[in-house]
Amino acid sequence: MSQQINWVPTSVDLEKPSAARMYDYVLGGHHNFAVDREIVEQLVAAQPSVKRFALMNRAFLRRAVLFLVDQGIRQFLDLGSGIPTVGNVHEIAQAADPDTKVVYVDNEHVAVAHSQLMLETNANAAMVHADIAKPLLVLQDPATRELLDFDQPVGILAVTIGHYILDEHDPNGVFAAYRDAVAPGSYLAITHMTDDFTDQDTLTSTMARSQNKVVARTREQVLPFFGDFELVEPGLVSTSQWRPERESDARPESEDGLYAGVARKR
Image 1 (cartoon, rainbow, N blue to C red):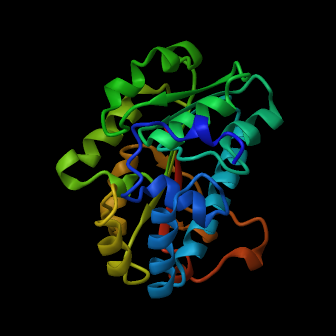
Image 2: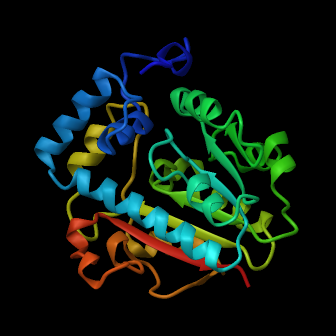
Image 3: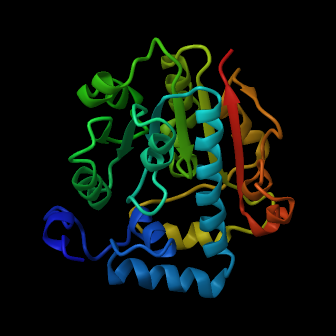
């Protein structure tokens, strides 16, 4: 952690775990604290599938970005992007086309600080410090407006973020605002925690002790987040079952724990 002084802002609460830092730890990252690692280990002890959920979700993100690149998408809005780790959106997309534009959005201080450090020399990517549940702030941020052309298709990535938008924050309205902001030909990729496959009570109760509460939703509750966008094949399925690179990569739904889908605006 040679950049520790830079990536730990003074505003960070070192006593309370955060979802972004916990996810970073699960994925093998180093931008997390003892309090994050402790709660992850408690989660894993009670629900060993938690690490697999995270890994399958990360693998979905890669496949979804590559799919959107193949569809001609050259600009991405990554909502709740978290702390950068191996295989970030801009690394995947810009490997295919260096001119691809990527805007990351998060409100976790370590995620923002580390992302800004990483992107200092990348003119085609930026980090916006904002609450994704307030779409107007995200969409009107100067960095968003500078990099993204909303008259052209945009790939909106809402990967493991919808379950952090509690019912009182109007998740349907939040997703509708992002869908309305983009041009026809845009795409929306979502993963969302569910207890349709397996009991998520341990995960939700443990997360309630962190800075980020979560809510598991059913398939019928997640589908409206896509609005009138048209789901691409295979529709809304578990993460490993969405266009796996090898047939053997698709696992039973109970081993994924999240729904995953990509839809296109007509």
